[in-house]
Length: 318
Image (tube, rainbow, N blue to C red; front, side, top):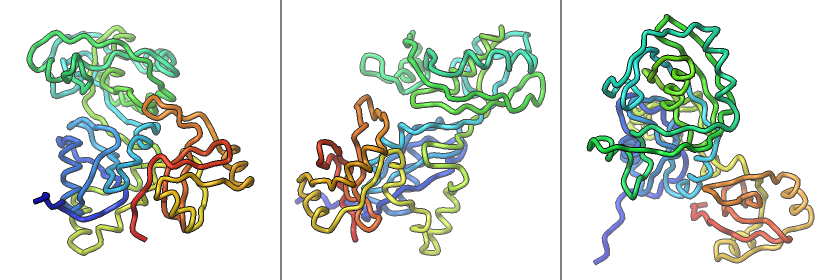
């Protein structure tokens, strides 16, 4: 006998304000239980010691996770000067120290070195795979871990506060694959000292922002009142970076069968005018578009040569 699927068909995005000392996986499980949803995932891991925006996809929204993960992130973080830990945060063991405490002017002077496309070596305590194993597993086992530098994009790095000689607060807007903990290490080294992250909060992921987030306690209270669905955002929320077009009932039926549809000249022109370079998980998605019926997502597909070919179809109730 086939195993019965547990949970309900719940579809949409929840912008969770992840609490301190909880893994992203634990946060997803908690939200999934609150909604009793069959399927859930998240867009971009947050360390247990980090708080803030963790977009969680339920049901058909999981098909849009790769698009959400490509969105720009905004972090606020505090660096503790003079000490470096093996994990590059306050959870690790002290491995290096320095008496140097950089002044505000010196800090601001090095920031331009860390904007634009730069090379960054990820922390050894990270989920990057090394010969099939997670780097953090190897590091915890005491093995020597060497990770290669990667090209990342830092759009903006600003010093916002220096509350005392030992600490500095920054905001960083960056692309996918950037590590705040590595930034703290590299900033410290550029200033002739050591450093590690003692506070980290994510404020933005793509189109998901802190102002729209909700806490686990808030979700539980809403669920208790039977109003949890009020926290759900539409499946297409993560697709703001690709153009959208309205289609008909007949075209919807064809797309759901995997068939391409013919674009009207006006549609083709509008999609072409909205097109911009876009790479998702290393794949060119510049021709991607979203087809909608009455404002509801129907399919993501490629719009070219006068046709729209579905790539991912959404199975949403109407």
